[in-house]
Image 1 (cartoon, one colour):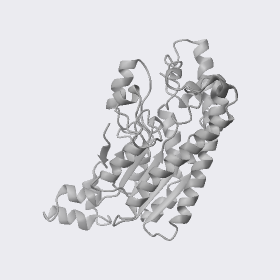
Image 2 (cartoon, rainbow, N blue to C red):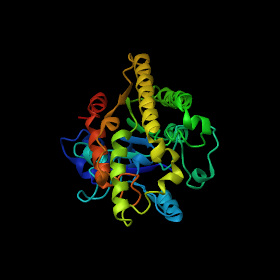
Image 3 (spheres, helix red, strand yellow):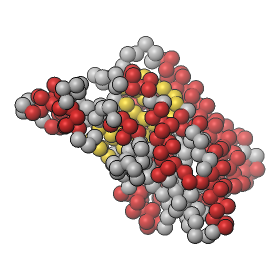
Image 4 (cartoon, rainbow, N blue to C red):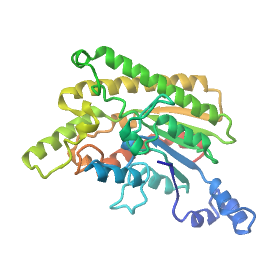
Length: 338
């Protein structure tokens, strides 16, 4: 699925104000000196690279899920165009409070941190899933390169029990180590593609790499949802459907999923530290690791979607949005967005 661009509502009225940093561009547009498209290019562009954690998706029947995956945009902790309340108090809404901008949503259901050229399975092909390399490729090919790039992807990569040999299910240590190392290598290769392009831009670029969500607290909330479903089978009607997509969500495999997620987050932290040291003298590029999502408390059942008990509910997206936005200060300061 292609990326979605959303421009801040009422941006023309906002930049027409005398105090706006874009008023000169607005006047040039009003006088016919630049087109509206050229005016929009002057606004900050913020991109979201990610998987279904960054979308408003949930799982139900096969065909409903298929349709939703192809049409669902926004309604997430990053981007929501619905009024609040009852809409989500998303990162985009928080940014709009002090600056108009263009949101670029690249994230999609089932996305993996992959090796470019790797063949996707049938399920991901029919959903037109773009993995990490594909989402990076979209940004590299864009006419207007983003100013701020948020990355939250890898949650599908910690399904350690999927296609695991019986021996490794019983003794998973080597498998966990191998998967975390492969993840780091694939992730680092794609981020370097991104950074190589940022260094050729005519404007500063900030990249924020979010750690995977707090799976330990997440499964506490999931266990509450499972108990509620046992008491009332009408609750979370597609809770067990999760296991068709993520084997490691089964209770027997959760402990090692939590371990792998922690290992992956440590790999991300170390990788970003290396990149930061490598590009520390660059005034054009800032790369940061954020543990905002990795430390967010997700232990309440109401944070899970009432249909699948897997993806985030509106309140769950609110928790993720608050955490993600709270750690954007250094990046916004680097870009001069106050």
